[in-house]
Length: 398
Image (cartoon, rainbow, N blue to C red):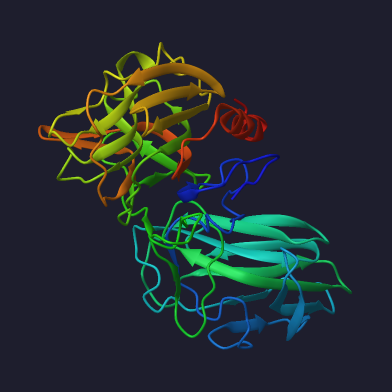
């Protein structure tokens, strides 16, 4: 969770932050641990010594031992220490295939390494990579497509170019069925996993968020493809005055209508409230009323809020005042439009969704990114909204 200067979180009841600009394939945050994955290694940090690993220095020039030291993120970690007694041309360690790798599938193998000289990840299928070490923690990664499934074929970590007379440390190893790396997942006696409800954490830690149906780019960031992508939480009920806030970047092909951040039921669109993308590069309030009617585009922003294909993020806020039965739109910190509602919104305990908007005639899907979404159980003031915008402006280059 990014907490920039003067960021308002009073009366926040739900939220998520994908860590855009902070997280990547190597780095996670408390509230965005990373894309769902399975670490196919066991004992991935060597906390159980060498169990599950085969170490070999066939020329006898590198010795292996257990170690404990300060790791890549300042935490104490277990590691394997490689002591380089003489130049080695044949020294590596690995875990056997044992059905980890299937021919025709693509895998990415990573490890955190600290030392001097050159460290490598090789495989029996090619795709060898080398990393020149700096004496600080670095993450090496290899992506390769398996061409066999036999037990004797696998990726392996190689210390064949390390500087003589030095020690090299290896920890937090990961091999996963993906064409790109994701942040490390610990594994012990069995494989480790990060499930679809452990990858994006509610800022209030009161509801699950499921990312099983969203795509990821090579930087391990959420991307909505416009065809079937969305994320969804367990049900949330907010009644009375409230505020929806989002930072998003649409693509040139954004579909209309599509949910940026809405609180609605898939099968009951009459119970909905939130921010929709609509035609003309505008935003429309998605509202279901107690009289059974609904709307998604008539209570809209005053004009287009972005230029297609500009790849520029937008900060949008939809604030509802229950006493006045009125909504206000704020775009990039400024009041954009005010609308009085024709009936009372029908607030129910329903999921929060980004990427998908549903009505009686079919689904509509958003095309782009939603970097964060927040819901407050009050109407944020103009000054609070302005303050939030300023806190996000530099991070998202708005």
